[in-house]
Amino acid sequence: MISWISLIGAAGIGAIIIKILDIVWLQKRLERSENRKWLRDQKLKAYSELSKAVLSIGLGEHIIKNLKNPYEFYSISSQAILLLENDDLVEKINQYVVNWDKLVNENLSEIESNIIYINLVEKSKSIVKELHKDLIIT
Image (tube, rainbow, N blue to C red; front, side, top):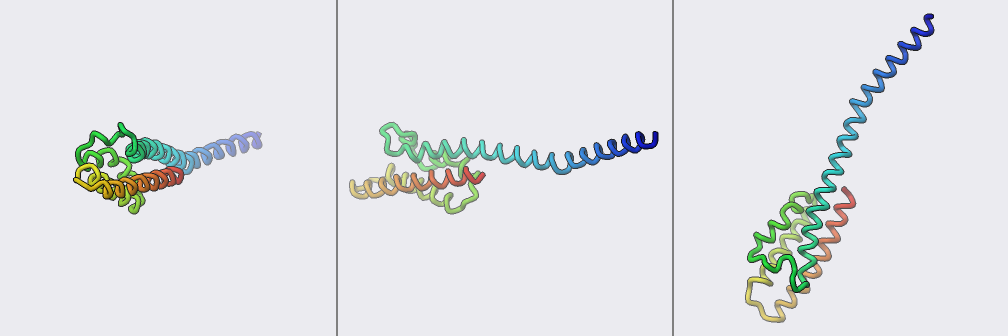
């Protein structure tokens, strides 16, 4: 009779210990996993929008064709910039916007326009590559 009571008591204590482990350790781990998943989804959405904008510069009907000033371009890139932890990449995006504004809104010679355009194409590839790396790390 005593062995059954000991067995039931041990099972009860074991269940309590398992529940405490679940609350303390497993729930925190699950919460962190959910936060990482949410962050990755947010980054994917923001990075996709920015990538589409910077890579479409060579298309006749590109996304940024109708933008009139750099602030409208920043509105496209703002969410991605907020999610980035890489300050160098944020600076590359800023430089891209400045060069894009120069190409679109300044009266440049054909040679100057071509130089800036080539630079923008190279920067766009570099930006997307770094966004991809950041997304993989998340």
